[in-house]
Length: 86
Ligand SMILES: [Zn+2]
Image (cartoon, rainbow, N blue to C red; front, side, top):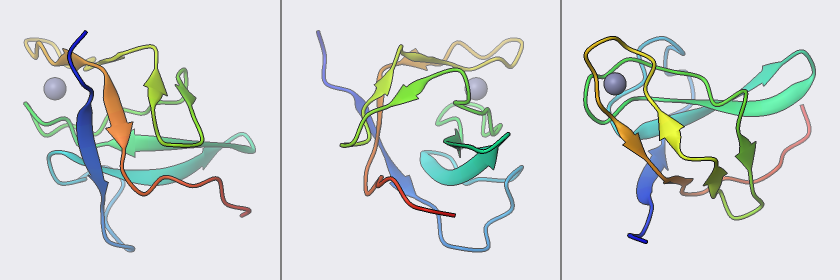
């Protein structure tokens, strides 16, 4: 298995729907902490709400970009991820 694609945390204040390619932002949906990522291929910002994010930022299962025509489908790791209280 190849190593996961490492995504870097986007700066605070980044627009949730305009996350730079290859970065991530923490989000809270229905009280659950998750993240949105900037797809490294198409630049859309899909949510990882239906994924599990481990303590070290490893995301399972692999991330699939939902955008039509985008074939991004990789294991990803959120560098700098930590479980935070909101
Ligand atoms: Zn994509």
